[in-house]
Image 1 (cartoon, rainbow, N blue to C red):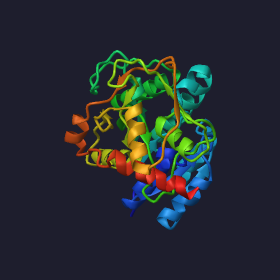
Image 2 (image 1 turned 90 degrees about the vertical axis):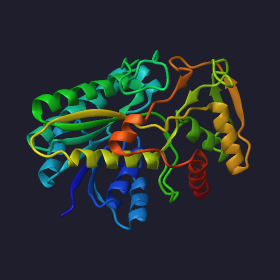
Image 3 (image 1 turned 180 degrees about the horizontal axis):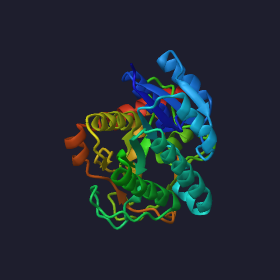
Amino acid sequence: MKKILLITWGMGYIWSHAVVAFEQAGYRTVIVDNLYNSDLSTYEWIGNILWYKPDFHELDLRNKNELEEIFKKYDFDWVLHFAGLKAPFESQEKPVLYFQNNISGSLNLFELMNTYDVKNIVFSSSASTYSTVNVPPITEKCNQVPETPYATSKFVWEKILEDLSKFSGFRSINLRYFNPVWCHPSGHIWEYLDDIPNNLFPYIFQVLSGRLPSLKVFGSDYDTLDGTGVRDYIDVVDLVDAHVLAYKKLSGITGNFWFNDSFNVWTGKGTSVLQAIDVVETVVWKKVEYSMMDRRPGDIPVSYCNTNKIQIELGWKSLTSLEQSIQNSWKFYNKQ
Protein backbone atom coordinates (compact mmCIF):
# COMPACT_ATOMS: atom_id res chain seq x y z
CA MET A 1 0.00 0.00 0.00
CA LYS A 2 1.32 3.43 -0.95
CA LYS A 3 2.51 5.84 1.74
CA ILE A 4 0.21 8.88 1.88
CA LEU A 5 1.85 12.30 1.98
CA LEU A 6 0.17 15.62 2.77
CA ILE A 7 1.75 18.49 0.78
CA THR A 8 0.77 21.97 1.95
CA TRP A 9 0.63 24.64 -0.76
CA GLY A 10 1.08 21.89 -3.32
CA MET A 11 0.00 24.17 -6.19
CA GLY A 12 2.95 26.48 -5.64
CA TYR A 13 6.10 26.64 -7.71
CA ILE A 14 8.46 24.32 -5.80
CA TRP A 15 5.62 22.33 -4.28
CA SER A 16 3.98 21.32 -7.56
CA HIS A 17 7.34 19.92 -8.63
CA ALA A 18 7.44 18.01 -5.33
CA VAL A 19 3.99 16.53 -6.03
CA VAL A 20 5.26 15.19 -9.36
CA ALA A 21 8.53 13.90 -7.88
CA PHE A 22 6.87 12.02 -5.01
CA GLU A 23 4.13 10.57 -7.19
CA GLN A 24 6.76 9.34 -9.63
CA ALA A 25 8.74 7.90 -6.71
CA GLY A 26 5.76 5.73 -5.76
CA TYR A 27 4.03 7.77 -3.04
CA ARG A 28 0.46 9.04 -2.93
CA THR A 29 0.19 12.79 -2.43
CA VAL A 30 -2.71 14.88 -1.14
CA ILE A 31 -2.49 18.60 -1.93
CA VAL A 32 -3.91 21.44 0.17
CA ASP A 33 -3.55 25.02 -1.05
CA ASN A 34 -5.49 28.27 -0.69
CA LEU A 35 -4.35 29.42 -4.16
CA TYR A 36 -3.17 32.75 -2.75
CA ASN A 37 0.00 32.73 -4.84
CA SER A 38 -0.75 29.97 -7.32
CA ASP A 39 -3.24 29.04 -9.99
CA LEU A 40 -5.50 26.07 -10.78
CA SER A 41 -3.83 25.76 -14.18
CA THR A 42 -0.91 24.16 -12.34
CA TYR A 43 -3.23 21.31 -11.36
CA GLU A 44 -3.93 20.68 -15.04
CA TRP A 45 -0.22 20.63 -15.84
CA ILE A 46 0.47 18.19 -13.00
CA GLY A 47 -2.18 15.95 -14.52
CA ASN A 48 -0.59 16.24 -17.96
CA ILE A 49 2.79 15.13 -16.61
CA LEU A 50 1.48 12.25 -14.46
CA TRP A 51 -1.48 11.28 -16.68
CA TYR A 52 -3.70 11.57 -13.59
CA LYS A 53 -4.45 14.15 -10.91
CA PRO A 54 -3.63 13.63 -7.22
CA ASP A 55 -6.28 14.64 -4.66
CA PHE A 56 -6.51 18.40 -4.18
CA HIS A 57 -8.37 20.40 -1.51
CA GLU A 58 -8.62 24.18 -1.65
CA LEU A 59 -8.33 25.46 1.92
CA ASP A 60 -6.35 27.76 4.17
CA LEU A 61 -4.34 26.23 7.02
CA ARG A 62 -5.72 28.93 9.29
CA ASN A 63 -9.10 27.23 8.98
CA LYS A 64 -8.49 24.48 11.53
CA ASN A 65 -11.91 22.84 11.17
CA GLU A 66 -11.55 22.35 7.42
CA LEU A 67 -7.98 21.13 7.84
CA GLU A 68 -9.10 18.58 10.43
CA GLU A 69 -11.59 17.13 7.96
CA ILE A 70 -8.62 16.35 5.71
CA PHE A 71 -6.85 14.55 8.54
CA LYS A 72 -10.02 12.56 9.22
CA LYS A 73 -10.32 11.54 5.57
CA TYR A 74 -6.75 10.30 5.00
CA ASP A 75 -4.40 8.10 6.99
CA PHE A 76 -1.30 10.26 6.48
CA ASP A 77 2.18 8.83 6.99
CA TRP A 78 3.91 12.19 6.96
CA VAL A 79 3.79 15.85 5.87
CA LEU A 80 5.78 17.98 3.46
CA HIS A 81 5.21 21.52 4.72
CA PHE A 82 5.63 24.38 2.25
CA ALA A 83 2.72 26.65 3.13
CA GLY A 84 3.47 30.31 3.67
CA LEU A 85 3.98 33.64 1.98
CA LYS A 86 7.49 33.86 0.61
CA ALA A 87 8.63 37.32 -0.52
CA PRO A 88 11.21 38.82 1.89
CA PHE A 89 10.74 42.39 0.66
CA GLU A 90 6.94 42.18 0.80
CA SER A 91 7.20 40.83 4.35
CA GLN A 92 8.91 44.04 5.44
CA GLU A 93 5.87 45.98 4.23
CA LYS A 94 3.29 43.51 5.61
CA PRO A 95 4.83 41.81 8.67
CA VAL A 96 1.53 41.06 10.43
CA LEU A 97 0.15 39.39 7.30
CA TYR A 98 3.24 37.17 7.14
CA PHE A 99 3.03 36.18 10.78
CA GLN A 100 -0.68 35.42 10.48
CA ASN A 101 -0.24 33.25 7.39
CA ASN A 102 3.11 31.65 8.08
CA ILE A 103 2.93 30.96 11.80
CA SER A 104 -0.71 30.62 12.88
CA GLY A 105 -1.56 28.25 10.02
CA SER A 106 1.45 26.10 10.83
CA LEU A 107 0.43 25.84 14.46
CA ASN A 108 -2.92 24.39 13.35
CA LEU A 109 -1.08 21.91 11.18
CA PHE A 110 1.31 20.84 13.94
CA GLU A 111 -1.54 20.47 16.44
CA LEU A 112 -3.48 18.19 14.10
CA MET A 113 -0.36 16.20 13.27
CA ASN A 114 0.10 15.58 16.98
CA THR A 115 -3.59 14.70 17.51
CA TYR A 116 -3.66 12.22 14.61
CA ASP A 117 -0.19 10.82 15.34
CA VAL A 118 1.41 12.00 12.10
CA LYS A 119 4.89 12.70 13.42
CA ASN A 120 7.11 12.78 10.29
CA ILE A 121 7.61 16.15 8.59
CA VAL A 122 10.02 17.67 6.08
CA PHE A 123 9.89 21.44 6.37
CA SER A 124 10.68 23.99 3.68
CA SER A 125 12.94 26.43 5.51
CA SER A 126 15.22 29.10 4.09
CA ALA A 127 18.84 30.20 4.03
CA SER A 128 17.49 33.67 4.81
CA THR A 129 17.42 32.57 8.45
CA TYR A 130 21.22 32.84 8.51
CA SER A 131 22.89 36.03 9.73
CA THR A 132 24.08 38.29 6.94
CA VAL A 133 27.43 38.68 8.69
CA ASN A 134 28.26 35.00 8.12
CA VAL A 135 31.14 34.57 5.68
CA PRO A 136 30.31 32.27 2.72
CA PRO A 137 30.29 29.39 2.18
CA ILE A 138 27.67 29.12 4.91
CA THR A 139 27.42 25.87 6.90
CA GLU A 140 24.55 24.59 9.01
CA LYS A 141 26.49 25.65 12.13
CA CYS A 142 26.56 29.33 11.14
CA ASN A 143 24.57 31.80 13.21
CA GLN A 144 20.88 32.21 12.44
CA VAL A 145 19.76 35.82 12.77
CA PRO A 146 16.69 36.40 10.55
CA GLU A 147 16.42 39.98 9.31
CA THR A 148 12.97 40.04 7.67
CA PRO A 149 9.53 38.93 8.92
CA TYR A 150 9.61 36.21 6.26
CA ALA A 151 12.91 34.84 7.59
CA THR A 152 11.68 35.19 11.17
CA SER A 153 8.63 33.04 10.40
CA LYS A 154 10.89 30.31 8.98
CA PHE A 155 13.19 30.53 12.01
CA VAL A 156 10.24 30.28 14.41
CA TRP A 157 8.98 27.19 12.55
CA GLU A 158 12.37 25.53 12.91
CA LYS A 159 12.44 26.17 16.66
CA ILE A 160 8.87 24.90 17.11
CA LEU A 161 9.72 21.70 15.25
CA GLU A 162 12.85 21.27 17.34
CA ASP A 163 10.74 21.38 20.52
CA LEU A 164 8.03 19.17 19.04
CA SER A 165 10.72 16.62 18.28
CA LYS A 166 12.12 16.71 21.81
CA PHE A 167 8.85 16.79 23.69
CA SER A 168 6.22 15.27 21.36
CA GLY A 169 8.21 12.68 19.44
CA PHE A 170 8.18 14.42 16.04
CA ARG A 171 10.76 13.45 13.43
CA SER A 172 11.60 16.53 11.39
CA ILE A 173 14.09 17.74 8.81
CA ASN A 174 14.51 21.39 7.86
CA LEU A 175 15.79 22.01 4.35
CA ARG A 176 17.33 25.49 4.02
CA TYR A 177 17.52 26.84 0.51
CA PHE A 178 17.57 30.10 -1.37
CA ASN A 179 16.94 31.05 -5.00
CA PRO A 180 15.32 27.91 -6.43
CA VAL A 181 14.77 28.49 -10.14
CA TRP A 182 13.86 26.99 -13.51
CA CYS A 183 11.07 24.61 -14.37
CA HIS A 184 10.19 20.99 -14.92
CA PRO A 185 12.04 19.40 -17.90
CA SER A 186 8.65 18.80 -19.54
CA GLY A 187 8.23 22.56 -19.81
CA HIS A 188 4.83 22.31 -18.11
CA ILE A 189 5.42 23.64 -14.57
CA TRP A 190 6.91 27.03 -13.81
CA GLU A 191 6.64 29.71 -11.17
CA TYR A 192 3.23 31.39 -11.26
CA LEU A 193 3.79 35.11 -11.71
CA ASP A 194 1.23 37.91 -11.73
CA ASP A 195 3.64 40.80 -11.10
CA ILE A 196 7.31 41.75 -11.53
CA PRO A 197 9.31 38.74 -10.23
CA ASN A 198 11.34 39.01 -7.05
CA ASN A 199 13.89 36.49 -8.32
CA LEU A 200 16.51 37.06 -10.99
CA PHE A 201 15.92 34.34 -13.58
CA PRO A 202 12.12 34.62 -13.80
CA TYR A 203 12.71 38.35 -14.24
CA ILE A 204 15.20 37.69 -17.07
CA PHE A 205 12.79 35.40 -18.87
CA GLN A 206 9.94 37.85 -18.53
CA VAL A 207 12.18 40.35 -20.33
CA LEU A 208 13.24 37.86 -23.01
CA SER A 209 9.62 36.93 -23.71
CA GLY A 210 8.63 40.59 -24.08
CA ARG A 211 6.42 40.75 -20.99
CA LEU A 212 8.73 43.31 -19.35
CA PRO A 213 10.86 45.93 -21.15
CA SER A 214 14.14 45.45 -19.25
CA LEU A 215 15.78 43.91 -16.20
CA LYS A 216 16.67 46.06 -13.22
CA VAL A 217 20.02 45.04 -11.71
CA PHE A 218 20.15 46.23 -8.11
CA GLY A 219 23.70 47.14 -7.11
CA SER A 220 26.81 47.52 -9.25
CA ASP A 221 29.37 48.46 -6.60
CA TYR A 222 29.59 45.36 -4.43
CA ASP A 223 32.99 43.89 -3.63
CA THR A 224 32.56 41.06 -6.12
CA LEU A 225 34.10 40.03 -9.44
CA ASP A 226 31.95 42.41 -11.51
CA GLY A 227 30.31 44.57 -8.82
CA THR A 228 26.95 42.76 -8.90
CA GLY A 229 25.50 40.49 -6.24
CA VAL A 230 26.45 36.80 -6.14
CA ARG A 231 23.89 34.09 -5.37
CA ASP A 232 23.64 30.31 -5.48
CA TYR A 233 20.88 29.23 -7.90
CA ILE A 234 19.55 25.69 -7.57
CA ASP A 235 17.44 23.85 -10.12
CA VAL A 236 14.00 23.15 -8.68
CA VAL A 237 14.07 19.50 -9.78
CA ASP A 238 17.35 18.92 -7.92
CA LEU A 239 15.80 20.69 -4.93
CA VAL A 240 12.76 18.44 -4.71
CA ASP A 241 15.02 15.39 -5.02
CA ALA A 242 16.51 16.49 -1.69
CA HIS A 243 13.01 16.31 -0.17
CA VAL A 244 12.62 12.72 -1.38
CA LEU A 245 15.94 11.78 0.23
CA ALA A 246 14.99 13.62 3.42
CA TYR A 247 11.84 11.53 3.68
CA LYS A 248 13.83 8.34 3.15
CA LYS A 249 16.10 9.46 5.99
CA LEU A 250 13.12 9.85 8.31
CA SER A 251 11.60 6.57 7.15
CA GLY A 252 14.78 4.75 8.11
CA ILE A 253 14.41 5.71 11.78
CA THR A 254 12.76 2.87 13.67
CA GLY A 255 11.31 2.72 17.15
CA ASN A 256 9.95 5.58 19.21
CA PHE A 257 12.84 7.94 18.58
CA TRP A 258 12.49 11.66 17.96
CA PHE A 259 14.70 13.33 15.36
CA ASN A 260 15.41 16.90 14.22
CA ASP A 261 18.10 18.12 11.85
CA SER A 262 18.77 20.79 9.22
CA PHE A 263 20.49 20.70 5.84
CA ASN A 264 21.60 23.28 3.29
CA VAL A 265 20.30 22.52 -0.21
CA TRP A 266 22.37 24.59 -2.63
CA THR A 267 24.83 23.91 -5.42
CA GLY A 268 27.73 25.37 -3.42
CA LYS A 269 28.63 27.71 -6.29
CA GLY A 270 28.02 31.44 -6.60
CA THR A 271 26.96 33.23 -9.80
CA SER A 272 26.88 37.01 -10.17
CA VAL A 273 23.99 38.82 -11.85
CA LEU A 274 26.08 39.77 -14.88
CA GLN A 275 27.46 36.24 -15.16
CA ALA A 276 23.90 34.92 -15.11
CA ILE A 277 22.87 37.32 -17.87
CA ASP A 278 25.86 36.23 -19.97
CA VAL A 279 25.02 32.53 -19.62
CA VAL A 280 21.37 33.11 -20.55
CA GLU A 281 22.33 35.09 -23.64
CA THR A 282 24.73 32.34 -24.72
CA VAL A 283 22.13 29.58 -24.30
CA VAL A 284 19.07 31.24 -25.85
CA TRP A 285 20.89 33.46 -28.38
CA LYS A 286 19.01 36.58 -27.34
CA LYS A 287 20.18 39.78 -25.67
CA VAL A 288 18.87 40.65 -22.22
CA GLU A 289 18.14 44.35 -21.88
CA TYR A 290 19.02 45.63 -18.41
CA SER A 291 19.74 48.80 -16.47
CA MET A 292 21.85 49.29 -13.36
CA MET A 293 20.06 50.51 -10.24
CA ASP A 294 21.05 51.40 -6.68
CA ARG A 295 21.33 48.65 -4.12
CA ARG A 296 18.14 47.39 -2.51
CA PRO A 297 17.86 47.68 1.28
CA GLY A 298 18.68 44.38 2.94
CA ASP A 299 20.55 42.83 0.00
CA ILE A 300 23.95 41.33 0.75
CA PRO A 301 26.92 41.11 -1.66
CA VAL A 302 27.52 37.34 -1.66
CA SER A 303 25.45 34.36 -0.54
CA TYR A 304 26.18 30.68 -1.12
CA CYS A 305 26.39 27.61 1.09
CA ASN A 306 28.56 24.65 1.92
CA THR A 307 26.71 21.44 0.98
CA ASN A 308 29.04 18.81 2.49
CA LYS A 309 26.58 17.75 5.18
CA ILE A 310 23.70 16.89 2.85
CA GLN A 311 26.03 15.10 0.44
CA ILE A 312 27.45 12.91 3.20
CA GLU A 313 24.32 12.25 5.28
CA LEU A 314 21.58 12.16 2.61
CA GLY A 315 23.62 11.30 -0.48
CA TRP A 316 22.31 14.36 -2.33
CA LYS A 317 24.04 16.73 -4.72
CA SER A 318 22.96 19.13 -7.43
CA LEU A 319 23.12 17.42 -10.84
CA THR A 320 21.59 19.90 -13.29
CA SER A 321 23.93 22.40 -14.95
CA LEU A 322 23.06 26.07 -15.19
CA GLU A 323 22.93 25.76 -18.98
CA GLN A 324 20.51 22.81 -18.90
CA SER A 325 18.27 24.61 -16.41
CA ILE A 326 18.12 27.63 -18.72
CA GLN A 327 17.22 25.41 -21.68
CA ASN A 328 14.34 23.86 -19.69
CA SER A 329 13.04 27.30 -18.77
CA TRP A 330 13.24 28.61 -22.31
CA LYS A 331 11.24 25.56 -23.41
CA PHE A 332 8.48 26.64 -21.02
CA TYR A 333 8.42 30.25 -22.23
CA ASN A 334 8.33 29.18 -25.86
CA LYS A 335 5.09 27.33 -25.07
CA GLN A 336 3.34 30.46 -23.81
